[in-house]
Every structure is written in C-alpha cells, then in structure tokens.
Length: 268
Image (cartoon, helix red, strand yellow):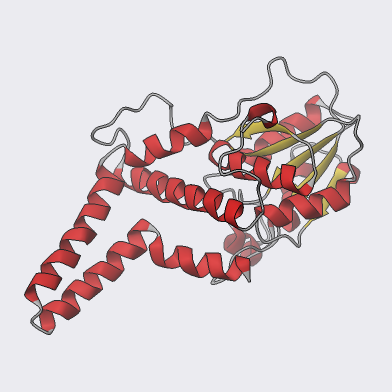
C-alpha cells in the first residue's frame, strides 16, 4: 500500500505534472469565467516551471543530500559484500530489446563493476525489482547480469534480488539474501542524492553498510541565482530533489528510518 500510495502522490505533485494540472485548471476557470482563479492558477504554473527550470533551486536542494555521505578515505582494505541499488537501467527499453541500456543513474552499475574487480572476493547483490506502477519494465536485477558479466564480473559472484519495489524493501530483502556477519564489511552503492534515504532504510532494517555514493547531479558549487545548466537538467534536478526530500520525511513518518536525515557514523 505504501508503494502504490507514494507513486500516486508523486505523480500528482512533481513539478511538471503539477504545472500541467494548474494550467488545465486555469483553462477550465477561464472557460467558466472565473477570471481571477484562472490568472492565479496560471501564474502558479508559470512560477513552478520558472523556478524549477531557470534557477539553481533544484541544485541547492540536492547539495545537502549529495554532501551528506562521502566515499571512505582510505577505502577499506577488505570488502566482503557490495549492494548496488536498482534504478540505473531503462527498464521498458530493456524489457523490449533485452539489452542493458543505462539511464541517468547508470553510474551505479558501472561503479559496482569497478568495485567488484577491485575486491575480487566480495559478493555482489543487485537489489531492484520492478518499482514502477504505471509503466511496465524489466527489473534491474534481471538486467544487471548482462551488463556486469560483459564488464568482467563472474556470474557466480552476483546475487539477484528482484522482488523489491522501493528502498526499504531493498534493505530488507538484501539483508535476507546477504546475511551479513558482524565482522564483515559491506559497501552500499547508490546515487549520492539517494544515499541518505538508503542509509536510513538499511540501518532501520539492521544491515550495517559503508556508503559508497556515485552519480552526482551537481558540482556542489552552485549558488542561488539563474540556472547553471540547461532547462531540462535543472527541471530534473528540482524534481529529483523534491522527491527525495518528500521520501525522507515519508520514511521517517512510516518508521522506515529512525531520522529524517541520517548522518555519517550513525550520528543524527
């Protein structure tokens, strides 16, 4: 229920969809001669798109998420397992074409392959089922072996968790599959903006992990003002940031994380 409710809610409130709904409301209001309401909703739609696409608003919202966790320096000498979260493949395309087309978060799987070669004794869990509600697609855990083996990872090292639909299920099912021992070191690979929510979910599930963030969307140097990227990327950053902040609050309220914004070292 949580998964479906969150998908429907997000479909309504993400910036572009919300702006379209407001434009539709503005048109209806104009046709029914509610002039003031039409102007107000139209103005809100314009404001949402202008802030999302033409300013650094999205990048600034991503900064505290992407800067929350950093790769360990120095890197661990021994790693027993690596968990890479899904979300890096074009699910619908791969379902139709049986390939391994990557999307904007594909760095997750490239980095996972690099880590697997760096730590040849580590097990590799690919955690990601079909999390989409409105579109059909191939689970990332079903697609990943084609890419990882092509990049030189031995198939016998890859464990596939293809039932999870969201981050909390990633954590629970990866725990059941990996059965990490207290003395073991496990890396968690996901996008930097998503790492706080992922760490909160894994801690709540009882799976201690070492964050290994990848797939940064910002330089970390953006300042308040006009967008420093193209309109589509700025809009994407705003959409990603709003979704992630909503997700952090929702996970805390649903007891899927014990804090809204997890911190490094377990200190909140």
